Length: 318
Image 1 (cartoon, rainbow, N blue to C red):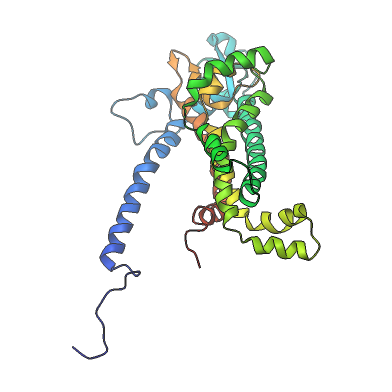
Image 2 (cartoon, one colour):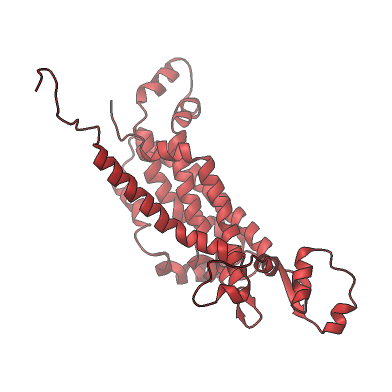
């Protein structure tokens, strides 16, 4: 062996076998997690018969029936009545008439979807807004009983939501907040704010105090230093926190079922009760689920760089 040539492996650089094993595990995990999503998307473009066939059909003729049933309500009519109608004006109208049915009106999916957007993004905005201010106060000021207060804030996430569902239902009924968007936004904000405070405090702790002190020496007030110095550097943490809060509010089911039934009902409790002729309309359910995944997917993909940086922020200290 020649002198000066080391065959020792670096403790940082993985071997080719390790890289191959890690890559294989990542690919396997990705396949396992994406199969249910692919199946939901495919079910949305199946006919009702193909969606419940056994064994399940992999190859099938695509159909828009699920999406048509999702966005409309239909009624069965006689062949004579359908023959007397003017020509179909849309693809969904053609699909309905082929099954001896006509479109009677629009469904409630779009209003429920809009409710989800308003409630989820509204509560996320308030949770992150209040959370960043509380986290900054805990990080920078001498708050009496700080550790006890932080533990109390965290303890609100320890119990399952269903444990307090009945008291909240009774309270909302007395206050007139049942089945209102403002009531759901307030509730989701209260649930998410503890998560926001704990996550954001860790991010703000990593920002050196000297930056703010230098800004205040230059004439900035505490509020100006917070707005122009701290917030820009905490952007990654704010984005990561916003994504986690949004995912909870977007997917929440228990409170939505208990506290809403009409005007403020969100998409999660509405999608499972989509009923077709003869039972559950699985293509419409799958179509609604597919569309419901789009906003949160787009939001996360657009902010993925901030999310990855936010999750690993502070992991390596210089």
